[in-house]
Length: 141
Image 1 (tube, one colour):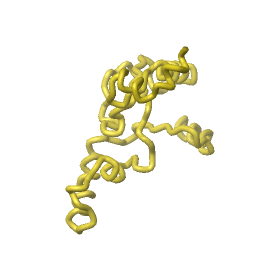
Image 2: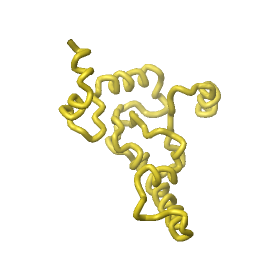
Image 3: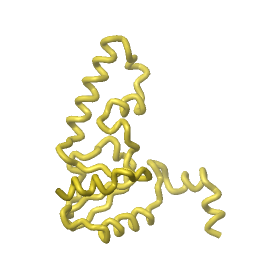
């Protein structure tokens, strides 16, 4: 299959991560994580008063992956469709009318170019980001 060939061709890559929504649902993932956390709390291995995002994220299916920077939504749909709802909180979202099977290198490059034009703010305003990183303003001069 195309998926198997792609996995084989990229198995040595280590600079980037690609996650595909194959038989995955973010809501089911969240419920499973809550159940696991409840067991940890019940057994005394976790204290609910100390629960934070990092600890909860360690219980998600994606615990060994970084949160996505870019989510590419094919088929022109303007929704996340139950994909990485928690992990994608600060991801840039690129929507393309191209269907997944036809999403090729040229289309991927368009998505990466879109991402390159985005100001990454992670929930902050542009002014807050600039105030925290004055060297960026100096570099533009």
